[in-house]
Length: 181
Image (cartoon, rainbow, N blue to C red; front, side, top):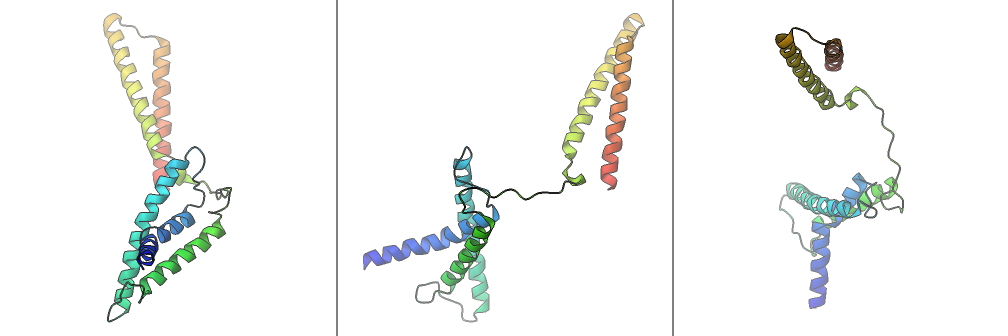
C-alpha cells in the first residue's frame, strides 16, 4: 500500500512539476539538444523552463477548471480533472514536438528567415558614431594644439578629419533613413 502511495506521489509530482512544461519547452525549442558543447547548459535551461512552465500550466489550468465548474474541483486521483488536463497538454505538446523534430537524433534545420531593415543593429550604428565622434574630437584638439604651438597643421591630419566628418554624415543619414521606415 505504501509503495502505491509513493508511486502516485512521484507520478503526480512529475505531472504537476515537470512533464507538461518540458514537452511544451521541447515543442517550442526543437533544436535544443542535451548533447554537444552546449548540452549541459541547454539541459539546465530545458529543466528550469520545464519546471516553470509546468507550474504556470498547472495554475492556469486549475484556475480555468475552477472557473468552469461552479462547485470547484478536487485535484485528486478520485477526481482527476486537473491531471487529465495536464496530461492532455503534455500529449499535445509531445505530438507537436515530434512533428517539429524535437526528439529526433539530429536537430531540425533552422527555418529560413527573411532579413529586413529590422535586422540592422541600431546599437552597432550608435557605437560607430560614438567612436567616430571621439576620434574626431581628439583629432580636432590635436590640430588646434599644433596650430597654436607652431601655426601649422599637416595635410594627412586634415584629410583624416574630413574623412571622419564624411563618414559621420553618411552614418547619420543611414540612421535617419532607418527611423523613417
